[in-house]
Length: 120
Length: 112
Image (tube, rainbow over all chains, first blue to last red; front, side):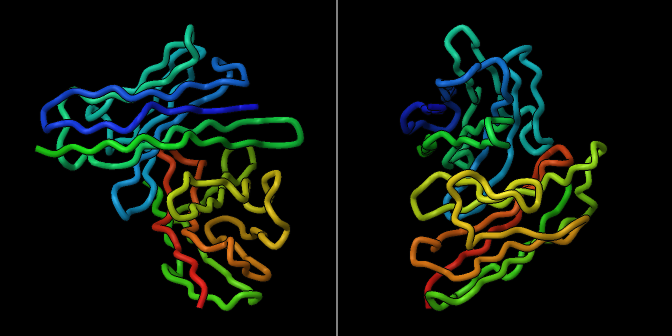
């Protein structure tokens, strides 16, 4: 069974750094793109970026380029989203997602979400 | 970025009645391989999103057949033939043709 398990909720202060994770299991981690999606409180979904763990090819949405870093450690089947200096406006739920071909068609999986709260 | 515009943004529906959500893109979603990467997602309150439809009209595994997708080019529709209580939530269209991929603003479906 394919699963994406994200790290737990975080409460941080402005200016602090943070790295959240998304661990994949039940499939070949290096063979599928993983993406990160932001959902600010009461708002819609926004693509932040995607990574192909097989070769670490990474693409960022222009809105998030330079604001976050997406990485992956294929030895432990885990993708990461990190900030070097958080702002209050980074308060949001962050979801990881994986998509691709599967038996019978196409499949899409989501993590359970990681709530990040940034407040002084 | 490709702008995805959904309407309506709020959709009160009577149980058992049909519902329809429109999604329009600011440019064609036909990819160079001939496919149109238009997805529909459902997000129930307090849950992660769930994909319902991919490539315009293909239902994901386990999705009830009361959900259907149609459209082409820049104009797409999600239809629910008979709304059930479990369909309450926010529905998003999403284009996966042009990077960055983009979602519509969301349509909130509620029961009258």
